[in-house]
Amino acid sequence: MAEIQSPSIVSLFPRKRRDEVCAQPFAMNSVKQPSICALLSAVVIILCAGSGHGRELQGIQEIAQPFIIAHRGGAATHPENTMEAFRAALAAGNRFVEADCFLLADGTVGVMHDTTLDRTTTTSGPTAAQTAATWARLRIAGLKLAGWPGEIRPPMLGEIVKEFGNRAVLVLEAKNAGCGRAIVDELNAHNIRKDLVLINSFLIDELTPAVEAGYPACFNEKDLPEFAVKPDVLISKGIRWVAIGRQANQAYIDAAKSAGIGVIIGTINRRSDWQRYVSMGIAGCYSSDPLYLTETNPIFTRDNYDSPQWRSGDVSNEDYYRGVRETGSKQLVLPIHPERFRSVLLGWLDTAPLADRSVVAVVEFSVQVGAIGSALGWVEVILTPDDTEISWKHRPGAPGPDALEFVLKPSGEIEIIEISGGLSRSLAVAKAASSLRELSGDYIISFSRGTVGFGKKNSAIRVTAPVSIQSPRYLTLGAGGVEARYGKVSVRGLK
Image 1 (cartoon, rainbow, N blue to C red):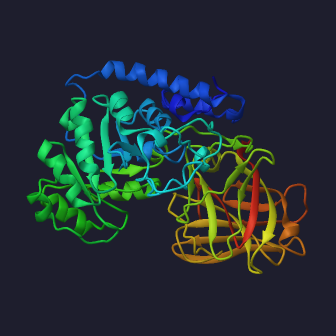
Image 2 (tube, rainbow, N blue to C red):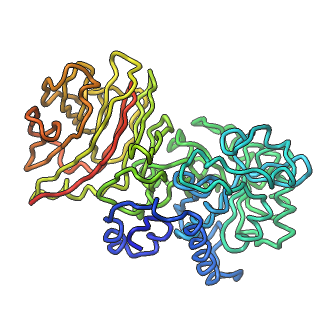
Image 3 (spheres, rainbow, N blue to C red):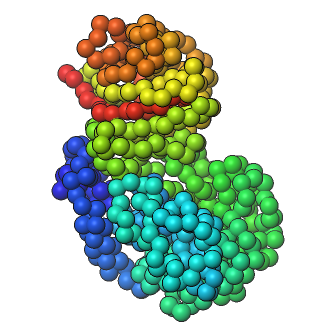
């Protein structure tokens, strides 16, 4: 079992045991995914059998706050809005099934986020123009989330209500006109407990059927730091919840709470953001990676990139692009973007050796520089004390959160940069090649008693310097203006 690194299964272990299990090499590719999905389904049945349909299952108002809703079932690691994702979320302990609902042309309700089928399925066309018959023929396109079998299909709302109704809180978004009424009709047909539902929409009129039927309703605000609809108006319409993006400020949250409205933030995928909003008094949030957010995700010491599946803790920057896991080359590929810094934070990496002053901590990685789209392009590995988001506008040495940057420069130089207290300084730099592409190879970053070293493996060219930042916890792989192909990332401690 140690070789099966499924977040949903491993999360059932106590934390100490999970760390012991997950420190093993990642080998998901050795397991046929349908078998894992079947196992997850069995776990869900066992868990849900204990909760049943009785009153002991907590409703939306009773669940301890702040709560975390698995966004589209946990879209960071599973195909979004699928039964496989919802089952995995419940198996991992999440209490919510969050699904996007479209009223289809024949009056039935399909589950999908986008207004078209293009992004998530193997076909194209308007979502709302489908019927139950055409919906049954749709297949998820590996969801552009590799490693999942091609037979996965998007569900109908009725399937979700039948399997998860009265077993979890159903968080259902009405995406188009008339969908709010159709959702209510489906829930009523299955006699779903009112407090085990939260119907939400950006279309405020779509919430009227929910309120009239006694279901809790949530208005989804536009991405603005002020109210599009004032709290007193929401209250007058019977709406007691509001969802808003990460631009919400303290004044907004306080005003909503004063009016008796619970605030849900979406979407939060970084622990630093979660901690900040918890301190502001939110009721809950949406997250595509709840296990990582709550620090219950599996921990690993290395990734050989021999599996196509993303791990819990693989977090993109605000560019919302994590690259491609190529199993053939065993590399994480960050494709070229001429104007943006693309990066992936490895929130699953066991960085405990970096905090142990009794050992020499060693970070190893390989990188191949591919296509170059900018003469100023660079490759960069970043170590930070927390997981604060790195902007797509990032440049090496730019003022920002505390960080240690290990940069491969277009000039063929390698450099260590420290950012502390908002100030940036170059700690060490050396000429290692004649060009950026020639810097491709295997690298080592070492920490020992307040000193950091950086250089190519088995090379005499290496830079060292004392650092003031102690115990960096998070590692980010990135590139700007070039294609970077990372592989064999690991952390270990040497006595």
